[in-house]
Length: 71
Image (cartoon, rainbow, N blue to C red):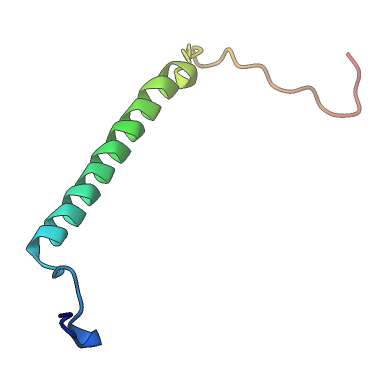
């Protein structure tokens, strides 16, 4: 004989602590992966952006030529 179950009580499981823990663990793993990718992106970008700047002593700077005059 088949048992009749009302529609509002026909669920397989409850959304309880177990599902909440799984969702939080997944979110933490996403943040960890995001952090690792960010750190890796900064590490591979640094050598290309590092430029050695040699400061010139004061007074050795060249002034631009005035416009309209040829040299």
